Structures are given as C-alpha cells and as structure tokens.
Length: 128
Length: 160
Image 1 (cartoon, rainbow over the protein chains, first blue to last red):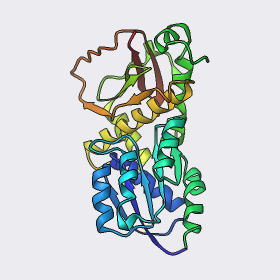
Image 2 (cartoon, each protein chain N blue to C red; image 1 turned 45 degrees about the vertical axis):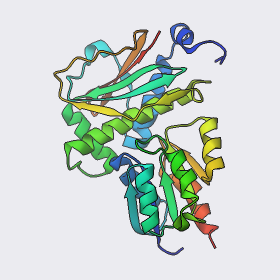
Image 3 (tube, chains in turn purple, orange; image 1 turned 120 degrees about the horizontal axis):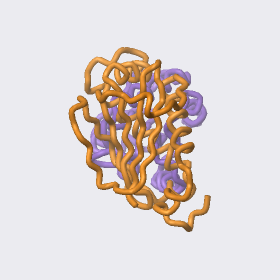
C-alpha cells in the first residue's frame, strides 16, 4: 500500500492525535496528516490538499460532520476519497444520514485501533 | 427498556446508575487504557481542578459533568496522548473529550435515547473556586471512580 495523506476533522486536537496514532497502528502508511477542527476548515483543507482518506467527527462547532460530508461531494479533491465518520453519535439515524450523505464507514467513540483497522483498511485496499 | 415511556419518567423509575458506571468504565478502559471501578462517593470527593461538561437536549435533557484534580487531569491526558500534555488547553481538551464520550456512550446504551437526544460540544472549567447552577432541576446520579488512586467524579443531572 502506498503512503497516503489523511485529513482528520475533529474539534478536539487530542482526538486528532489519537486518530492519527490509531491509523498508524492499523498499518496505514501515512505521508502527511492534514488537520481541521470543524467542517468548514475541513472543506478549505480539501480544496488545497489531495488526500487518500478522510476521518471526520459529527458534533463540531461552525459546521458539523454531516454537512461537511454533503459539501465535500462538490469538492474536486474529494471525489472518490473514502470518508469515515468517527463520533460519539451512535444512533441508527446518524449512521443512515452519514451513509446517505456519502460516508463509507462509521466508527463509534470510544474506539479501539482494531476498529479503525477493520473499517479503514478495506476502503484503502479497494481504491483503484 | 421500553421506548414509549417519557425519559423523565424512566429516569425516576429505572436505575440508570449502573448504565452510567458501565459507560465510564468502558471509556477509561478503551481510550485511557486504565480500568476504573466505582468507589463510595462520600469517601472520595475530588477537590476541583478541572470540570468538563456536556449538555444533553431533546428526549433526554440535562448536563453531564466530570470533575477531577488538576494532577489527575494531566495524568488522564498523558495516558490518552501517550505523551505529556504540553499545555493546560490540551488537558482541558482531553477531559472534555472524555466527558463527550461518556455522555455519548451512556445515551447510546439507553434504548430510544440515541435517536432523540443531541449533545453539545464540551465546555471545560479549570480551577476549583466556582459554583455550578444547572437548569436541570430533576434527579441526578453520581459515580466516583479511582484513576491511579485519585477520585474522578461523574455526575448526570436531568430535567424533570
């Protein structure tokens, strides 16, 4: 698997570090991590960076994760890039909304590195 | 648990404390890498140092708080990050995220609450000289866990 760039969108800087560490523990070869603390920053980062995977929280100030996923569909750099939600919101309706908006995976916090591996690796291996 | 009874009624009729305790234990074990167990709250009161809070709105309405001494908060942040937290902001961030995950984990365990309850982003207070007045005037439940021998108090106050 080639090294990839990852975009991590979460309002907690601690959580962004934990997600990055979990990705590395899952065996994802990371060239660079681009960080954003809300959906609006995430969209701005996407317009300036080509990434191979996006991990995104839902409950964030300014723009939440569901809106980010909807708007990311219009960003050229996001086309074909898998988005995985990582969130405390565990309801079925949130999962359905996220998947309908275009997310390809859903991980509930608290999460283990194994769960990140289980949800993220297949998406990267499927990429053309 | 049924879903047709109001949550205000259910919170009075059902014992949710074990659910809260399980939610706290799971978050600490998975995200902090430490097993914690409840102790008698009256015998282990943390003197305030950091207090994180997350609001709940919708079917379940109230506020979840987690409170511990500053040194404990630093240790929790270090355990989460795998390195010493550089700033007080990072410590607050870590405790806020713990509170967020406990609240989400708790509501996800209550059948019917997960779809009809929203969470706020966390707020964290540092320092102990404050009084917290919540409009959540209903019942409350509290558990105290020992983290590396120091008390961590988790309290849920609900609107009646």
